[in-house]
Length: 145
Length: 183
Image 1 (cartoon, helix red, strand yellow):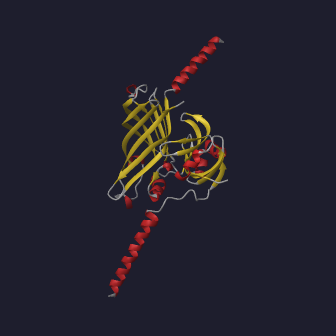
Image 2: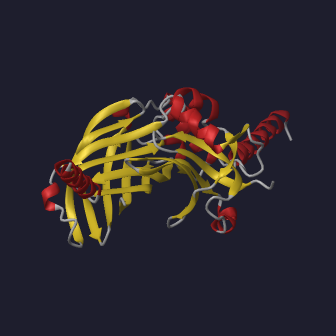
Image 3: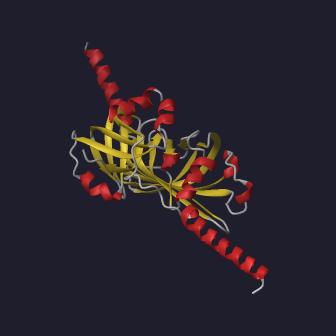
C-alpha cells in the first residue's frame, strides 16, 4: 500500500474514533447523578429560606445551580401526576404556602411518601433558584443520618 | 362597638369571597419545542407557579429557567449558560389578564375559550403577548391550556453563528396548568 493511502486511512480512522468519542462523551453525555454528588453547602432549611427572602441576589449567587443538603422539620409531602414534593412552609402568600419545595428523584418517591409532617428530615438536591415565593430543589435524595 | 363589629364582619365576608375566586398551582407544566433540520429541542418544566383570579381575570405565572429538563444534558447546559443565561435571568414570568373573563363561568363545568393578554418576560426582555387558550372548569379545578410561538430574537436570545442553521429561530410554548381553588 502506498504511503499516502496509509496516511489518509489513518486520518479517517482517527476522525471516526474522535467522532464516536464526541458523540458519546460530549453530545450524549449523561445528566449528573445528583444523589452521588457531594453537597456544596449543608444548611438548615430555615437558614436557607431566610437567606433568599432577605437577599435573593446574594443567596442566588451562592446557592443556585449547586447541590445543597438541607435539614429541618418537614411541613407536608405533595403529589402531582409525576412528582413527589417535600415541602417546608414558612409563609403564606398569593400562591398559598411559601417556603422550600424539594422534588424527589423517582428512586426516593416511595420513601418520601412515608414522611410524617413535623418530622425531621435531611434531603439533598440541585437548587434551581427562588421564584419569589419558593426556593426549588430538584432531583432530591434522602440523606442517611 | 356593634357597628365596628358589623364592618369587620362585612370585610371578612368580602375577603373570603375574594379568596374563593382564586385558583393556584405550583406544579404547572410548560413545554417548549422547536424542530429544525438537524436538531429537535424539547424541554419540560413541571414546577410552574400560576395564579388566576376569577373575579378580576388577573392571571400570572412564574417559571424558574433552571427547572427546565432536557433529554440531553449538553442541551440543558447550553440552554442555561449560553442562551437563556439563567444565572443572570433566573425567572421567566407572565403577568396579564383573561380579557373575556365574563365568558368563563367558574360555577359551571365546561370548556371555555379564554383570551389572554399581558406581558411575557424571558431573558430579561418583556414583550406584549395576546393569545387564545382554553379554561376547563371541573368542580373546584380549572385547567388552563394554551399553545403559542415566540421568536428567540424578540427576547434577545442569540444563537451562535456556528449553529445558527441547525437551531430553529422560533420556539413553540405549550402551557398546561391545573389550578386548584385556594382555600
